[in-house]
Amino acid sequence: MAKGARTNTPEMNMQPSSAEQGTSKKRCFVISPIGEEGSEGRRHADWVYTKLVKPALQQFGISSLRADEMKVPGDINAHILRAILDFELCIAVLTDHNPNVFYEVGVAHAARRPLSSCCKRGSALHSTSMSTDT
Image (cartoon, one colour):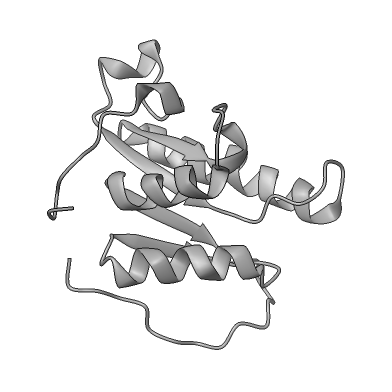
């Protein structure tokens, strides 16, 4: 796929809601651990997404989507990869060292997608540079 090419995927629920369409043109895919409903990891992921990431993006007119919000049939992994490649930017929550999150970050990095990452204070992450020239 050519750089900057987009696919039209309204059936993937990856478009901004009708309320956001008038103000939002950019989309952010949030790469995040999801975890089991009610688990500590899920509570943290939900808090980061709903209280930090989503409101911050909304202030700039950017719609957000996390994997558990994709209400589409088919292979969820294919839908996640498509969002990483098609959305204008990605934010990754690296807390809990989730292998799926690291894989998806690797895909975004290899595809040279704009990517920002965060983790819970005190997490044992090694400091590495994941910047790209985008």
